[in-house]
Length: 237
Image (cartoon, rainbow, N blue to C red; front, side):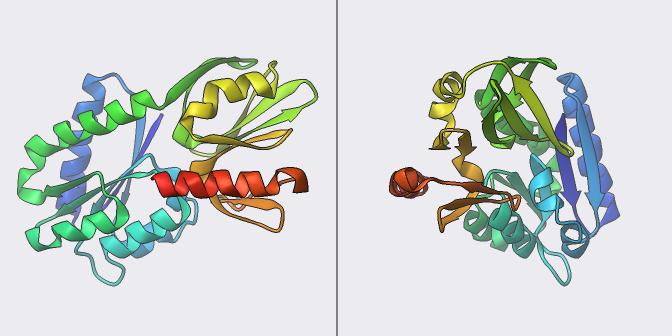
């Protein structure tokens, strides 16, 4: 299910963006949830909002905490949320590049721009999906939302972010899972852990710290190779 946030201090634009998004997503028969926020402070009040949403439509010009500051907070925790800036002022356009915004839409062009914007985002998201036959049934997962995979007692456990963290189980060796996910930016940090590098905040003291706060061990024998692989990945972005 797509998790989408709209953050704008004008109710008129909150509701207009919501209507346009609902029409777009219903035409594509996609399940979704849309949440509305009236300020950057309100959005950031819940820590989970920094990692919860696949797409955030963000007004730039808001009081107190503006859209750029709010987007920077998102990026500090989660580098692959799709951020779309909505504004009435063209002079803010360059600011969007600081937080890797996927689009910059003028408020007077919403009617035509939302559809094109969602097409572009959904196309990118479709590429980054993998399907596994879990014990819970066959599921297609967005790789951006897959935090890590753990090998435990002959199973591979997938730790995945939806509205809340969920866990899927698979009777398959981690070696086989690694083959399928290696091209998607996953790194084997331990014989029992395969981690999505998009969610690594830092590697220090033989541990990997994820953007959710979770810590995973790195054995001494792998430590330097893991750090080098992560540095190379960050440099390639």
